Amino acid sequence: MIQMLRLAWRNMWRNWRRTVIALVAIILGVILLLFFDGLIKGSDQAIFGNAIRIYGGNLQIHAPGFRAKANRLPLLPLDNPDVVVSTVQSRPEVLAVAQRISTAGIISNRGNTLRVGITAIDPRIEAPLSIQAEYMVQGRFLLPEDRDAIVIGQGMAEALQVHVGDTVNLVGRRKNEAMRQHSMQIVGIYDLGMPEIEKASVYIALSDAQTLYNLRDQTTEAVIFLKQAGEEAALMQSLQAALPAYEVDTWQTLRPEITETMQTKLAVTTFFGIVILLIAAIGILNLMLMAAFERTREMGVLAALGMKGHQIMLLFLLEGALIGVVGAVVGCGLGALLVTWVGHVGISFAGVSGMGEVGALMGNTLYPVITLADVLSRAVLVVVITALAALYPAWQAARREPAVALHHV
View 1 (cartoon, helix red, strand yellow):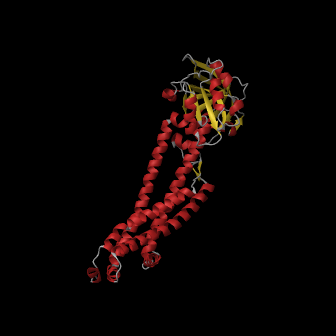
View 2 (cartoon, one colour):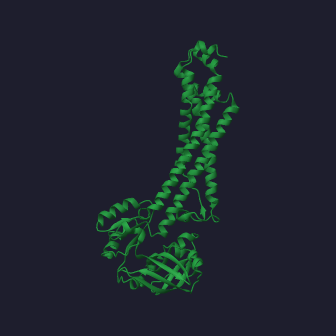
View 3 (cartoon, rainbow, N blue to C red):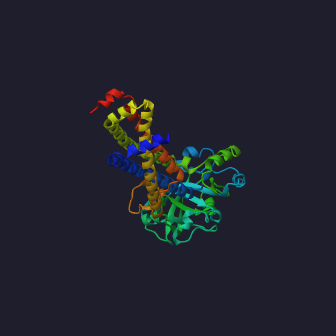
C-alpha cells in the first residue's frame, strides 16, 4: 500500500501544471466554503444572542391561548404567577426569572405615530440583564418606583422627534380590551444600532403598568434567563411537564417568521456550498480523465507487467484522494486563518439599511465564527468528493485491455 501511495504521489506531480490548476480550484472552493460557514455561524450566534436579550430571555411562560395569538400580544394574565416563579427558580440552570406585562399599543407625538409593543418590566430584576439598560445613550433606565415614565430606542426618538424629558402619548390595551391613553415622560433613550427594532418596543415599570392596564398584582408572562445558552429545549420540556396549565415557549416559537428566515438563509448557504464542491469535483474529474487518456500506454505496460485491474483502479483513486488531501489541508488552513482574522476585525453593515428584523438582530458588525470541527468536517468532505470524482476515470483505466493499451497513440 505504501508503494502504491508513493507511485500515486509521483504520478500526481508528473504534469504539475495541471495538478496545480486543480489544486487552486479546490483551495479557493474550500476557502470560500469555510468563509460561508463562518458567516452563517457568526450571524446565527449574533441573532440568537441579541434575540435572547431583546425579546425576553431564553424562555417565556404564558397563559393558555397566548401562543396562537402571539403576534397580537393578547393581554392574558397568568394564574398564580408566584407558583410559576418558584418552580422556575428551583432549576439549577436558571440565572433569573422575571415577571412582565406585554401588550400592544400606539405611541404618538405631534402627529408622528408608531405602533409598538409595550413591555412592562421589574427593573430590580431585569436592569442588570437588560441590553437596553446597557446601551443607554440619554437619560437613565427605569426604576421600580417610576410612574408615568417610559424608555424608548434611538430609532423611535428620531421617528417621533423627541428627547429625554419630552412627553408622549401612549395608548395600550387594558384587561377588558378597552384602550387606555396616558401621557408618559421619556426618562431614557437607548441605542442598539437596530432602528427597526428600536421603533417597535417601549418599556415602562411593571407596577405602573399594573395600574394603567387594570392588572392589579397580575402579570402576563414570566421570562427566564439561563446561565448558558443551548439548554432551552431540555428545560422547556421539563417546565412544560411541571407546569401543564401554562404555555412554555422560546422567542423562536413565538416568532416563527424569524426562524423561517434563518432556515431559508441556511438552505441558500448549503446550496452555494454544494455548488462550490461540485465545481471542485468537476475539476478533479476532468483532471483524472485527461490523466487516464494520456497514460493509456503506461497503463498497458503496468498491466503487462502483472498489475491487476483493481490495482490500477486503486492507483488512480489514490491520485484523486491525494489531490483532495493537499487541497483540503492548504484550503482549510488558509480558510481558517481568513475566518479567524475577519472574526477579529468584523464585517461592518453600518451603511446597509432595509435588511429587516433578522438583519437588525445581526447588528451593525458581523463576526464570522468557525470551529475545529467545522474545518475537519469540510476537509474530510473535500477528500471524499475528490476521491469519488476520480472513481469513473479509475474504472476506465482499470478496464482497458493491455494489448489495446500498448498500441494506443
